[in-house]
Length: 520
Image 1 (cartoon, rainbow, N blue to C red):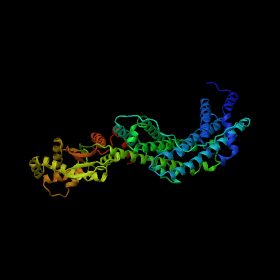
Image 2 (cartoon, helix red, strand yellow):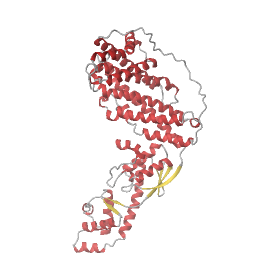
Image 3 (cartoon, one colour):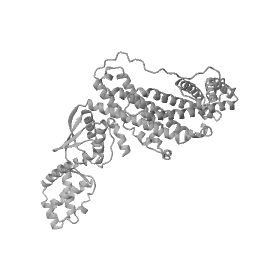
Image 4 (cartoon, rainbow, N blue to C red):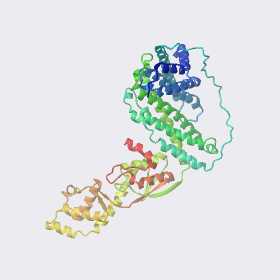
């Protein structure tokens, strides 16, 4: 492709920059102390910088030494005018939301973030004017009658539109609450970021809390808001459950916080780390690249996004409890080693995910399926049933011939026990997982007869996970049908593990369990 004429390109950019430079001249001449971010001002900066950045990029300004710094200032204005607009939305509209979390601390943090955005935008406008001087452009016109003040009358418009009539409100509420829980389970990276303190900020893992995960979560929240606005807003459904308007407020506030957090993460990764010298703000305002940026990112954006998300999840769990359909389902136990750490944690994670009360019933006992350590206790009953089963099968074996061979010295006790294990495996009573089974250390000093030795060996090898006792045992889960459905899917997938006790892939329906595996 041919190279553009440098002079023609400069004239083009100068003409396209006239309004932006006039705004810059007005703001810089008045001083940072008089800069008040308003929606008219930010809307103007956003529109002008967006069209200018697109034009610059279409000519390859990002890769051109003459225009790179100029293009960087335009990018700063585009990003921070967008962030500022979102922050102003939060400041003005959060007052009208019925929130479960205190607003005072949040609003104070919003003001701090707005002040930071104003300072960075001011620096970029200064740099633009300096770039114009470097190009030899004439001083921008200042008296264009630009007025970006914003005088807002108090109050809201009356809510007097007729609501829509929608069938199956209960089904819709359950769907929305379930979708929200499933799409926000992995947002705990926000809590990790919010707990970080300087100087450890520099060690933040932006692979887990950077632009990509922020944007992915933002898009999921946006989709949830769209579902609400399409199917619930202005409907009779919204009036039938007071938690619904609360949920809508939380979804909206989280969405706007995440939009700002995505911009901050993008700026940190793209510009602070890779292109900091082109920002040219260190001399003008060193605080802009100080710990203040990461403090706002972690303690304001990540913290409040997580708090509002957690509050919204609690609302969803309350709604699911309200519309719970209680039933029972019989499910097989984890096939290899019962309710040890991994399957128990997955079961309790499913129950906690929905916030429902689910009981596990076996024998004469009832256990809380939402508590991992309560599920561990079920293993006592499981082990008892398995031992009775394997002992019964063992008693059916004729061991006289093996005992005679031991007495005659033609085989060792080890060899006899291995033969017993082989016969039980052929009967599908046990599955040997370690070859050869380590029998010798177990019987080394034992004086028991062959049958008692075999019982002891089987128990010890089962404890060591060298074999598993095969028995179709089932337990009953009682609780909300939605939770039981997911538990059934988990059971159909061997409770997420193979015979060696390692993870296997779970189906998409249980994708929200991924965060547990990532953390464990």
